[in-house]
Length: 151
Image 1 (cartoon, rainbow, N blue to C red):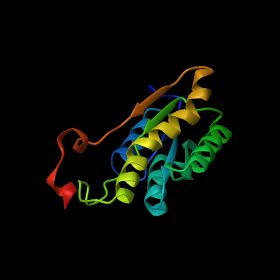
Image 2 (cartoon, rainbow, N blue to C red):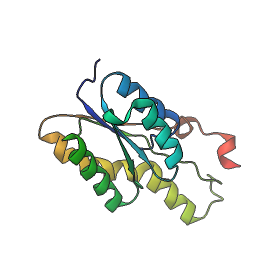
Image 3 (cartoon, rainbow, N blue to C red):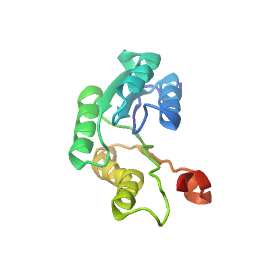
Image 4 (cartoon, one colour):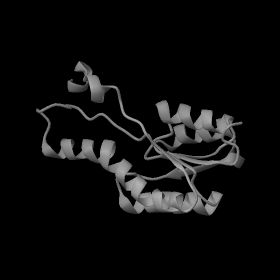
């Protein structure tokens, strides 16, 4: 159990890579914060799989500074700190090319980039008191692009 007694806050952990990360970290002994924006049902499935005693379910829109503060505060209140932050929340909005309007462009930037900055800004001061790790995930589409994103 490589993560025994560590606290891992994983954004966007109700599905996909975030879900898999939450489950793996819990298997390695971490206490896990399962964050979701809208899909509570899927997030609850992750909590059930991990076990409520080692988990905190927290709804928060990580593009919203108040929600980020709430997410961080609830995590520290429940588990006493944060050892690992995984910035995983991300979304693809269509169209994802030059045909989109500024609103879609800004939404894309907020979800896929600004959210990580907000989380780091809020969590880093707590980590600096002892230690911690921050992992930022990105989609392969950011490197390669993909026709389905444009559709």
